[in-house]
Image (cartoon, rainbow, N blue to C red; front, side):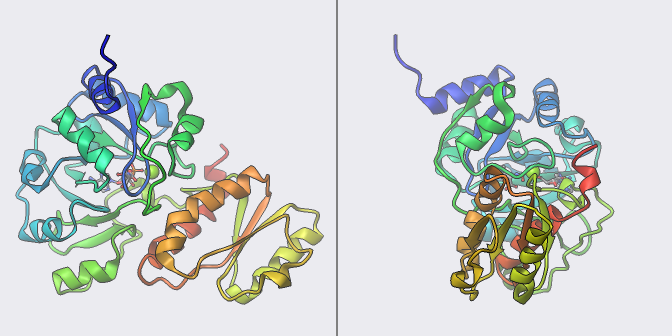
Length: 328
Ligand code: TXA
Ligand code: MG
């Protein structure tokens, strides 16, 4: 019997209403046929995600935009042309064809064309839109390898395509172009500076938008360990303090610190890269590693919010958000 190639097998699973873990350039997604409400509902169940938090529809290219959105503004086409395929999601007015379960009842829909070859091949083989959130349990750290998907979701996912580690490492930037003025709803893999350059205008970052966005919840992308953020020059002192209280402390050592200074401080020490693109690529891996080493507290500092530093700072802040959301 002919062995079915992985991409074809994954497309079959989607057509049958199943769920597929697949790589994108940002993080792994948990995909379902965007036009099959039952399959999409299962995504929410498997993730443990509230039904009010909408999913992103992944499409092949910008020519399909109007299949999913109505009244697509010029700004959206300009951004699509410049940044797709790539780590950018556009929020637009929903076309009636989009099932409500995908948009969490909102009148807008989030759409993106991913840049990863495997994701693109899957979209071509499947032929339709793939609704996919990040392939992790709600609130947990996003997966950047196929193993993370299997570890996090187990038998909840029917098939996992392995495309190696994700290179960007943080989720796509979400830009809302459904209203009068474009705004960033979630900083991510496409930098604010590049978006502003392409549009020739400044883009506000709206942490508190009238539109609900799961990425806007205070506690998200969180490791199990408690995340403590301090100024870069206070990281060692803070780590020492927690250690003095008998805690297993993990350090994300800011660039410029001398690892030699950490002698005897901290249970696990990771020196973070000074290059923000490199740091973004490793960020979730670092958080997983510190959890794996059973750190109880992670002490870190925020990078300058420029380039990918904006997305990194956003994720670290959310990881440090109120614990009560994580453990009910
Ligand atoms: O890089 C990414 O964006 C990854 C890969 C798999 O594409 N996906 C991802 O999906 O991060 P998810 O579901 O974890 O995050 C999508 C975010 C959520 O915060 C959701 O609330 C927001 O997009 N979103 C979706 N539809 C929206 C809408 N109509 N208006 C505002 N926010 C929306
Ligand atoms: Mg997510």
